[in-house]
Amino acid sequence: MRIFKYIVAAFFVFNLPTFCLFAFGSTMGRVVSILTFILPILYAIFSKNLVILKFFLIVGLSYFLLSGFQFYSGDESNYWAWFIKYLLLVLFGAAIVSDISKKELLIMLIIAASSVVFNAVFFSDDYGRYSGFYLDPNAAGSVCMAGYALSFGFEKSRLKTIAQFLCTFAGLITFSRTFIVLWIIVNLISLKLNPKNIKVLALGVVVIAFTLSLASFLNFNPIRFSQLQSLVGDEEVSLEELNEGSRTATWAKFYPYISEKPVLGHGFGSFQGGNQISRIGPHNSFLLIWGEAGIMALLAFLGLHLYLLKKSLVIFYQKPHLFMMSISLILFLMTNHNYFTAYTIIFISMWIFIETHKIVKNEN
Image 1 (tube, helix red, strand yellow):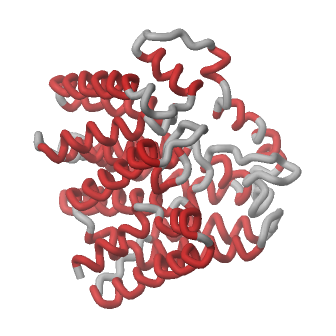
Image 2: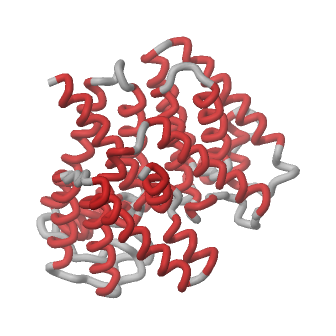
Image 3: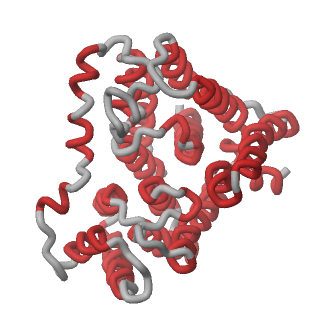
């Protein structure tokens, strides 16, 4: 069962359904997608370990049922596919998540970060932002951040050092501004845990210098690379460049539409781009849920993540990585609106929830 567990977990952690669709075509992508959501059912049956995460069920049901009452736009088959896949992951995938240890998850996240480096070295492109298995640099940055935050759950060890170095380097070459902000926040939190963690910040400076030294070998995105250079004072970046593609400016476009229907929302598909409201999404999962499904769905989603934040803060000195992962998750969701199809993120958030709940329950 252990090998079976690793195989099934890999489908989610490494984003294999989407990656295989992109890399090997629609037939392979369809096969891998089916396996991704059939294998967890088999695992739950054979392991006899059905774990029901009621909070996640409430979030999914509130969003899909309330947004589905007034379908706005898009392919209806997408609605049912997303709904069913989310339910299968929450109902049966939790059995796998509950069996994944801290060390096992960290090793998988190290492999995930390695895919970003592999992408940069062997498959560089003119875009110059790399994403490995995740096809989206911001999503890849969030996974690297999860690995980096998780590393603080380990005592001084080779595995911890490898994770911190590799996840920092891989996160930097995604050139995700969210990753950089989260990396700084997590390191500041680590100083509260132990002032000696200032050494980790020093490691970060070394990694940034190492990244800058590779500019002549790897094809980096010029705008984002200049922003990274500005962190160490090598180059000045204008305010206009820093604000280019600003998330706050994107969010502001959706506030009037939310105020039109704050209680019931506009319906499924309304905030996902490509329609009369906007050609792009809001880059914020909280805004998307509010705009499509209304205030009740938003409160359920907020409740789940506030629970994670509050409970992980209570046990911060015992398990600091859980609080670091929780705050990183929440801030990432404020810059990404694909929560219900971001199965890697859902998998990681379920793991945080289960681990936090175990400790709180034992203490009580």
